[in-house]
Structures are given as structure tokens and as C-alpha cells.
Length: 301
Ligand code: SF4
Image (cartoon, rainbow, N blue to C red; front, side, top):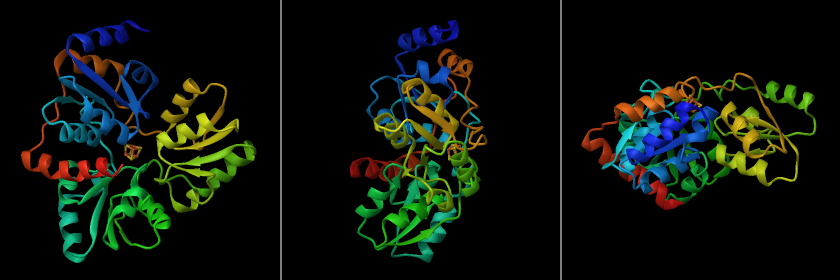
């Protein structure tokens, strides 16, 4: 434990704060976090938090979700410019337009979206819950925003519904190709291929397992196999090396690194605790509207 990590742990106690970190955060941050998880787990932890302050080590939409689910708490985002390009691809105005175009459809949004967008949608989902949530809806038609790849994967699993897919994408996962999988399999022919559904369908089709970051981690931990090619952000590989050192894990492609997720440095977490920055504030209408959307997701679990 470094001096800065020790200082964070003592200040966290003094200030009655809880630190939540996404799997894509660097390992020095994951080590001082109270909870490390995927978007869904972090949202649930934030909603259940008793501490007066929540430090969210991730990107902006995650900190916004924490604020929406537990609005009386102070929610701090240590790196204020850590956003998600996919979340920025859709606006509340886009949703209003789509609802007019398809008035009989339910609107389902991936958690990677702004509070304003969530406030206009019927129900939220994460990559781990999307299929279950789509099946739970009574509407036959579903508008899915913003990720076209997760939407296409859900549509393939829920064939009795019609999906209108918004054309957003994650710049990190979308640029992985089928030839990346073929190349990795050539080097590691015995490895199982585990793919995040934010990847394109040509990649998903080659997977032995498709799932969220938590799903991929659990698969590796519980599998009798020894070797795995990991088709999601490199933070998952780092975490697996720590928690399952007996397994061999290989990153599918070296470009699977999210620069926004790496914006938070351990010094930013300390600064956040010392100076109470950077606080997430949202207008009342966004909190109320987005709460319905997120809370409905949590209740379907
Ligand atoms: S990995 Fe992709 S979806 Fe996740 S925060 Fe980065 S850009 Fe957004």
C-alpha cells in the first residue's frame, strides 16, 4: 500500500465516504475501493449506500446514476472530464423524436446514457440485464438506445419482439473485428473466447461466451478451462490476473483500452476526498424522470 492509498483510506473513514470503482479502473484504484463492479453492481451499491458521500471512480453517467438512485448523498466524480463517447451519441431530443415516430414502442436505454436521456425512456438496462429486461416488457416493439451492438445482441436473444436500434456504439468495443479473434485464436488455440456484447455481431458470433464484465469474470473464475481470450476493456484482464492468478488470460486486442476510464488517477481520488470535488448536481426533473427508468431496471432483477 502506497502513502497516497493509506491517506485515502484514512480520509474515507474520517469523511464517511464510500468508494465505488468500475472494473475498467486502474488496479491502484480498485485496491482502495470498497466495491468494484460493473455498471449494474455499482448502481445497486450506490442506491444502498449509507455513507454521506459516494466517490464514483468511473465515467460521468455512472456518477449520475448514483446521484439519481440516492439523491440525498453527495456524489463526487474524481475526474470531471471522464465521459463516455457512446453516452454522448444520443440526446433527449432524439428520444422524443423516436417516441413520436414509434408511439406503440417501449423505449429501453442502456445505462451508458445521460440523466436527460434516461428521463425520457421507459426502462434502463445494463449489459448483464438487457435480455431479461427486454423479455419483461409487454410491448412487442422496443426502441433500443444508444448501443447498436448490444441492441442487436438483445434482439438475437429475444426473437419475438421487434427492435428499432439507435446507431450509437462504443468506440473501444466496436472496432474489434472478427480477424482479431482469428489472430488471437491462432496464438492461443486452446483458449475460450469471452466477448462483451458491445462488440459487433461478427465478433459476438465467434464467442464461446457473451456477457457483461461481471459475467466474464465469473465465467473465468468458475470454469474448469485454463486459458481465456478476453474481448472487453483491459481492466478486466488486470482484475482477473489478480483474483484468478492460476488462469491464463489474454486481451483480445491491445487497443481495448478506454481512455476515459483511465482518466481517473489515484491522486484524483485523494483530491476528491480532500476538497469535496467534483460534485454531481442534476436538475430535479432529470432526477425524478431518470429515477423511474433506473428503479424499474433494478426491480426487474
Ligand atoms: S468502454 Fe466504451 S462504453 Fe465503456 S465508458 Fe469507455 S467508451 Fe463508454
